[in-house]
Length: 430
Image (tube, rainbow, N blue to C red; front, side, top):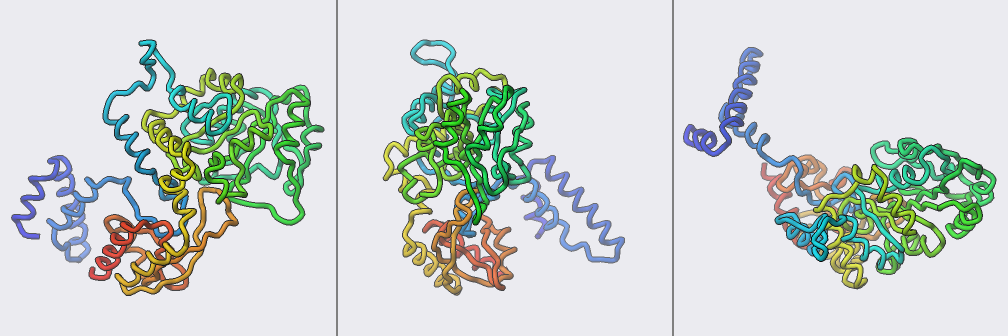
């Protein structure tokens, strides 16, 4: 870098950051000189320091992994309608907690309650910041200081080491395990009910399945046991399937509506994952139980903010027209797209970068349908490109397999393909 470029760099950058970058570069240069090494171009080193300091840490990434709901890459990308709602609400004041008709304080829970009641067939609904929070709140409000019955086969651990027993313990409830890891019957719950039992909890097995010699009571059977004992059944579905709009393609995933119709009193599920909205936790079910959750002190600590509510409202609104949801909710669109369209993108990418088209299997991800395989196609390039692509602008994350980097096109849009091609070519020319 010449002196003029260095001067322009210092002029354009925030002064405090420029000074810090210069001092850091000089310190590193001194260490290298003392070690007998060439310190290199100090101005270029300072420029790199400045770029690193000023670039956003949370960045857009091109997902070429074939994992549709990729937890590490932000799970569900939002649709255009949801993003429009976020811009409208986030760029202005809003009626977040203001009743415009009454001219007085309102509730942020009122904005989505009607939509969720209609879509899930529920009496009432409540939104918090994620599904773990929804389960925590339900147990704290309904079972603090009392027992909760859970099957041993449902004591799961989800991402980053979060375990159902730990969440349950933080609620103040006492865990009572019933059945065995592979076989639990309705009679096991019935036998374990005692004077301190407050809730029967059913937990979706998320990202694993027990196969072979197994047994698990249906929601209907478990609801009958709960009703007979005068206890609520809380069903933690996790993944966020709402109803008819996507059960056609996710037939193995229970929906919130189906769970309520089967007799569950409260159902908890995610706003992102298979629902395709922002990270949120949703509770639907009996009005009296939802009200107990709303009144609990934890609800204020766990509630969702206005941007989450706006994005979730924009997503849920699409589900009023199931066919529109399949077109405009990105997660659903990727799941149902015919494989021919994916192959065409892989062929276009391969032609642009000199790669090879390879048939692959995409995954749902997000702890849903761990055994499901979605037919897909990828463009295979050199393994050595995996690292440089992750640091490209925008970063491209693929899968390294059998000595090659696979760029799966089920999770790439038509526009993404052009950006990935440009990134591959730029990385090769470095």
